[in-house]
Length: 369
Image 1 (cartoon, rainbow, N blue to C red):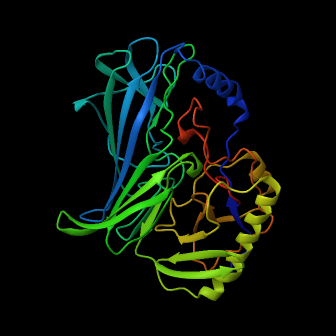
Image 2: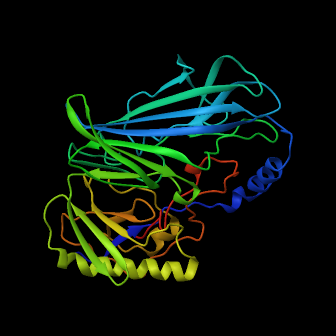
């Protein structure tokens, strides 16, 4: 068993957004719009995994948008996934099936701007389609995958629509309920955020494929997906069920101790900071499809302070209930002294001025080192 291994908690400071949130609540409560803005009436994000000829993850996001502000809009600002964490081909955008060009935002290099061919008038509706294709990693920091398994963590992989610029600008908030659709090979095990609505099999490009639809709401936080040809074992640790998914058969008893240690740590967090916002207490421990790039590289000053020399990251929370682990050196040791930031909330309020992707999604989006 590997000792002195560390986990990482990816947190974010939400205190700085409190004034914006307060203003957004006040504006949303008014009958008339006080500034530029729009509403996402409906959205659907589809994740399609293509194992051959080379593995790829295709993400298609479709948004039904309505101008609910007090003025016409000429453009829409959004944030694409970061290329440091994700390796993807050039994204595509369509506005009512007309191609749009991504332009850099003059105010923030991380953002891009889509300029409409015609002014978006007040009260009118339009359809925005964004598409991106993820490819296996080319650097050590890129998230990677194989033709046998992949995961998309609860942070940063789907486009993020941003509020309209201007005084009392609004927009970018997902609907209270929206659909996440996942298409993977028939033999894959699948775990996603949300509540499973349907599961069906169909032939896509001469391959038998399972299609799952999961209804998302604010309690689910940022969406995530993990899927692959895993070996599944279930452990019962008191009232909590631990689902072990590994790429090859493992000694489940050797994994029982670290699994129980993680469950104890989560219960400790729940008692100190409040229960995680999810209906089930089940936990998934999933082996990394590829160890390189499996764990994020974000490190806080505090984590650097408490870390000891030559510590190696062996596990990281990918969502509220899913831990990705490196089993190449044997079952990881899970220390009881994990830390989590109180700022780790699964989702913003329904009328928060930001898209849900701005909020971390887990018990420990910065989970432990």
